[in-house]
Image 1 (tube, one colour):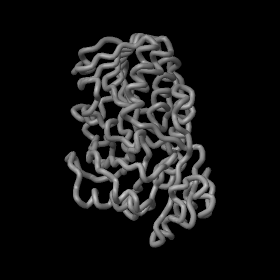
Image 2 (image 1 turned 120 degrees about the horizontal axis):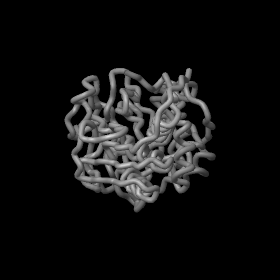
Image 3 (image 1 turned 45 degrees about the vertical axis):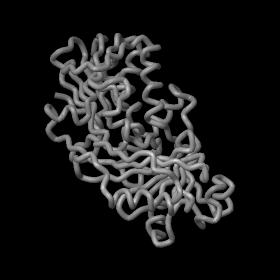
Length: 336
């Protein structure tokens, strides 16, 4: 249910230039607000959680484990991605399984919508590299994916083109700023949002010219969803674990599971070159759901968990609707 509270337009300062803050800045700048985006790190954003993200735009797949609000926000976000960055790849995504995970595969099919079941021949036609690898697959044709390390600079360029200002190496807090302030610091906001915790997501980047994929392939796994995401220049990202820990290393167990998943998808990945190991800490509240907090002219956007690239555009749209029209989405927003 939506309520309406009048708000006046004002200059907007946003803290945090990762995926959550970047989308806030873009939509507010396009709407005519005087936007300044502050980022304590440098323009490379290597310390950002977004740097280690998978970039999956897969609301239908995520419905297997996520709450309905994630699907709703994710589906809306797909429309915004298409509108604002029309070159975003929307080639769909695939779900496959090892024979021993057959029951979980069928459960996944029952728990999700907007997919087609492909037999082995149809799968090979769609992805020739997977010929003979799996007896069937689930194809989600409307899903997409982005490469975070490439798309985040594009968003920053769009913010500047829309009249916004970005200040890197700017370690500010809300009390330092006037007007409306939107805090998108992720775990950096834990000094004020004590419920936040970090959930580690590990990834591996590999390189091979022996396999060609046009879309992400998700492998059913008993512990967490594992996926192989094609990047440019013969690169593939393997991800992602979801571990209740706040160190930033990659464990041997996780590395073996990620590399094993790639080998299951195609044995040629066994000869791939490992380019990079890494992990990021995803900001999450106890219920693993996002939250827009509103207190006067101070707004916080946090708790995107493992869905940052999927839901950030929709959260930015909701925030803009509140500031411009006083519109409140009670599923996401908390006032006071």
